[in-house]
Image (cartoon, rainbow, N blue to C red; front, side, top):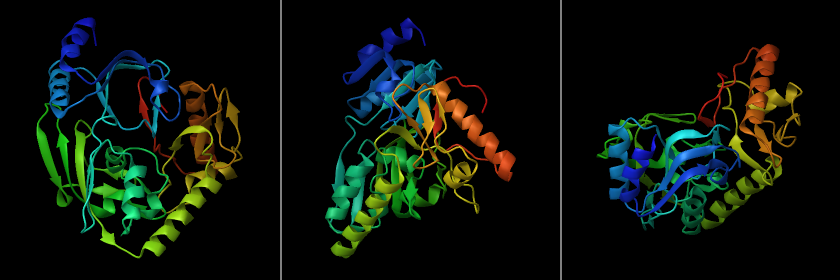
Length: 306
């Protein structure tokens, strides 16, 4: 991405456009070098213009929610990062328990408002970080519940700014996976839930919240779970713990001594510190248990092969 590209993009944006922006300001990890251009468009038309331009000029473009579940390289990212968390925030909850949500709505906000209206099925997602769009893309879940369980339809924009509608039958979901094209950005989603007993919903919500507080290192900055849980095997955190790596520190990063599938930023961690811990965890678990750990977080920018 060069100065000419920046000069052409700037007039398109009435929302937020930040140049050479440090990404540690925009990730839950608090880690990351600078991105060439960080954009929070004000309208869908602005977003379409940027997508068309970046596609036509072969500019690297990444769609980011709230900045959770991501590790940005210390070298930053040469391209555009687009976030919808500031302006795409309309949330509609209907009497029949249908929910229409813009992708920039925080998942926690949707959970709070839905459960307060007696809608069941979202209680276990309390405390899960990120936006609705990001959560649906990765099929976020907790305690055997996934956001895709109640998915009905979504509107996305392709790389040329064209709107596309995906129905439930059009999308495949799996563990921390959806088949939404990675070069398209989710704008709005519709979910169909059911009404339930308010007391039961509140009890389940409190149980899930308490479980997170007691088992996860919430007072430190992190990206959430680093690895996916291996299918039909012990959880990743258990394997890392039993490999003797719990509490291990490299630089400013640490494999949490509270939950071994979390790597926390102790205050001055770099992406390289985190990568070294990831490599060590993968290698040690494989050597000890012959199990390959796959990343749940996304890596953005230049990294050595892991």
